[in-house]
Image (cartoon, rainbow, N blue to C red; front, side, top):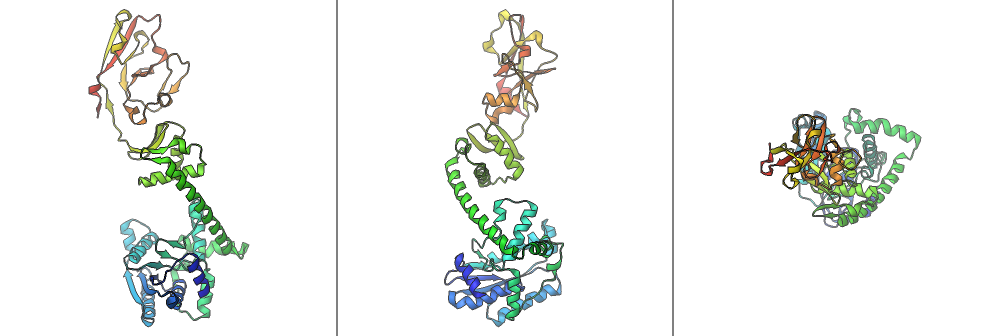
Length: 429
């Protein structure tokens, strides 16, 4: 067993000579084997060991007995011992998170508070398989299928290539004492259900199931390493101070594009789920914006994809209208004009509304204002301030840009309806 553990340590370069290693020990078979093995390898690596134990306050006297068991073992083997007591049930409720998540966060917070070079945890091959199955059942991508990393920062997992069964068999054969956690058999916990119900069924289909999944995890990690290297190269080319340069990503593989965009948004502390990411991807081939959350928007102007904070506002337009005979009309002094006699009802100047459409004069087509604004390359962040002129039948024009065919001036026009916007009176309400 020590040879297998030594092999994993060397394979992933987990321990350096002279390291101070903090071992997370619950008292169960996995952590007791880990601690026993590191004790036997201590002189070979010239390492100093310390132990951290968390008493979660969940199983009453059994939980207290676990802590005493680990403390006594450390005392007998002259190992520095650290203990944290928490009330996981009530504390997690107060924090508004699940017991498992709260306990995990408190564990690593405790581990990181103790001076050390490495933190050794007893995650094993079976834990890794369970983690991948758990993530797949909830929905995950290739990154999630990579499982538990053997090394993450200063956290090391020397048992990651050894199954839970092999660990227990070895403990029994070599009289390594350990405690049994009764909650391991409670299927109310998601991971326990996978361990106690799903894994046995899958192992009947393939007695080598765990090793088969281990090979898959190794392949996933190799593929992920290649993809991440490609993503980093594309990211360095495409991401500028102005945002993501569209010309650099528009012809790249969608797998890389998604990851570059996700990484860019993450760098700006904006998290994207699958739905948001797909919506942002659609902006690449068009100009527009998409609301991520609150006043945070993904904005694309055709050249760059970026993140902007856009506060919703209602603009009040102050305008002057005038009806003139066509002979006395001078269009140089107005912002919008049309055939007065073709207007239906009352005219108003407002912001664009969802679903607004217009038939631009001379174009012979009808389109949404969103599409029109894209064609006119009106910057996304000013579109809500562009005045839209409407009568009782709908939009008749866009101030400064176009008039609807329905009210356009022609050879039969006698009276002109003109609009002059008082720009100093455009006010955010």
